[in-house]
Image (cartoon, rainbow, N blue to C red; front, side, top):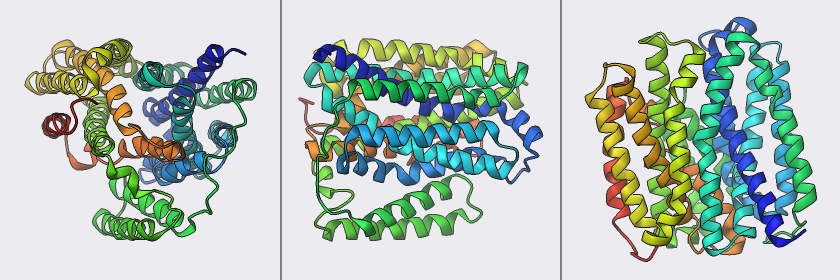
Length: 428
């Protein structure tokens, strides 16, 4: 196989990985009513169909990035796909809420290993301008996967069975396992250092409690404080450890740190918007699950188009200038949504979605490039993990109580990202 053909297959594997994680996270949103009826879920257990996935994903992301350096990428990718496939199969077969929640947790672990490993593969097989283009393609499937999940979930919930959506993951995982066996080198580990046991334990526990505090803890303030204390202990352990799970030197580059902070804020703004739009369309406008999925298409399509033109813009303007333009566009979209709130679909939802989608499509690749900027080979998995972890840190839906407040918070977040984008090196 030629080097160029191998790169294409690696890109397909990475894009399918991102597509799977985005798809599985959104698939159940438009199926919640059917899930509740079929599995006899209560008001307490229903949120955990989503929370279990997010909790596992957030808890194991950092260790997922570390494992992709400690072992060969192909081996970790294979393990991740098998875990994700088993979680998907069990979700589809689940006879009750307990099995469903456990299966979703297993899915989340698979996603946590899959996300940083697939991004690290791009760093392994691409360099220079080709890496920028690969990351743009990789980023383009985020909104597409989420929207496809919403539409497919709505169709299946309305006309067939929500279980089919989980079963569809199985052949996709088998396809990716076959592609990985065919195209990926069995590269040795990029690091042979002893494992940081205490760092691993505190990172998993601290990140897990943090996600739990922001997504359904019975006592969120106490849980958040416990998470912060454990994460502070994690930082102390990593500072003293000769072989840390998270090498703190990765933050010595302001460009990378800026990328993580900006991604956290911008993703928090957009994810809060997605959450409240779904709630608004179903509860206020009384849209069916299928119609809710279709209502998201303007966002995903323009997001995809934005991601497709971003490599040329980065070649001309570099990452920071493209990011400034992207967040300015998103600011306009959020402001228009706030000003037109309560009006007909297109002025209040459709057109703002299209504008926000363009901005998000332009922003993801520069933010990812900044997060992996000049990272050492033995830290590429960790940097990829941090790119994914940062996307979970500021969930607007956990801060806001209703849609308009979420829009105001989103505007503030985007303004802060604009300030961050204007700092640091100009040649990035």
